Length: 592
Image 1 (cartoon, rainbow, N blue to C red):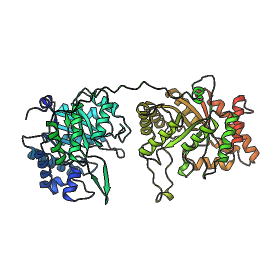
Image 2 (cartoon, one colour):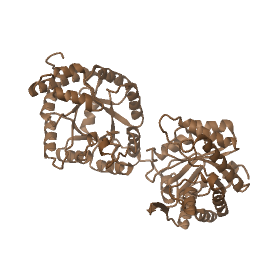
Image 3 (cartoon, rainbow, N blue to C red):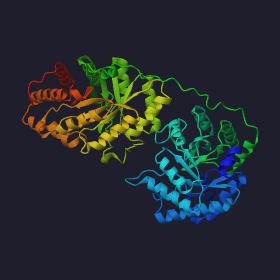
Image 4 (cartoon, rainbow, N blue to C red):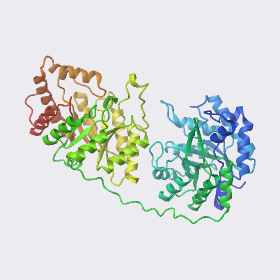
């Protein structure tokens, strides 16, 4: 066969379709991977390769998608890679290109993921592989290093990188298609880029309509329509003729490499080959999508105050009710509004105990009281679909800011009935919402994050905070500052971060409360000197101390924060009102 780069100059290259789903259908093996069949059932794998070649494809993938040392031992991994490559090479002969297929390798613990990719690559290179497919990727992690490694050892190798993008334009890692394409095309050692999995042909057509220019050969390998589940098995019922129509449209958009992913069969590929022989359909103007003019977030008074160096606004946190009666919560919010709170921030089921949804309460406050709100949103309880749906609702209600946090895990005693989701961590969620800001939302959210000043290794927390800024965070709410170490960490954060910082102030109301905070609440540390002040103090004295200490904290942190973040203890809004008044007076009765 002619060199692949010459082949692509003359016309489209058609790949094979799915291996895993087709193997499962032929062998009636449910919930079993197909990769081990390279050794246990090589004739079956070879028969699948032959079926795709008979359908007319010009390139086949090795049956090695999930073969890596995370899934198989080192010796078995190398053995399966060799068997998969030799099966494909022997079956293809001189009639088709063989691509060494490498699927995503997800981080587990402290494992060196780059080393795992390079182990697989080196196994293929030792076998003589000259064509590589890195597929179903959700991010661009290590792509430059992998690509350079391949080209250093085999300069004439051809590398195709393919991302798995959902119809909304995001990967499962929350990365936006446009930025991933820009990142991959900027790597000179990558020869072609494209899409596979998660989206069908129609969805890929839509995705490419919205994509900016791509300077390298483009590939598309859609799934065979929308999946359905019957008797615990996944089925794809797309008509091969419809699949082929979409492939022809993709070709008209400039896609030069076409194939199939989950659910596709030799029938789908045969229909595609036939459709590509026909005159191309009306060409879609692929790059005619004009980027929308950037829209500034709504200009809420809280953000305006936070950006005003002449004042420091107050964000006050109220815990949502544990039942459906919101009358007391609403009354507390009114009190805080009247005493000068600039924004009410609402926790999302704190410590994983069920309360009224923070976003729904935020909408009610904003609508009925006209006060700015900052609802918290955790990664714990919602998958991506639920998160995006909730954000769309908040946007429609005019909410301008959200605080995105990982969230406390569900207590061990409840885990049999209630499951953590944690589809993302807070950094990935911020990145995901920032992508929605750029593509979907008419008015983008301002994204806030948490900053734990009480962490034992604060340098790690600070590095995470920098990462949050890099992906879209504009401000931080800190954990309460009740130790000298937390104060020093705040100073370091101010020197390092660019975003707005709201310093955390949590009134300690009693000796028992101080001990509880120090022992039971993650992320909060109370200085032993502060705890000692509350010994033998009655309620009245405890509240006086709470006001005095909170005002002293505010005075000390004032040069390093842009605002204050007060956490209301046990619904005592009158106490918070006194603290706000004392802070505004800028007077402290005595040294503590």
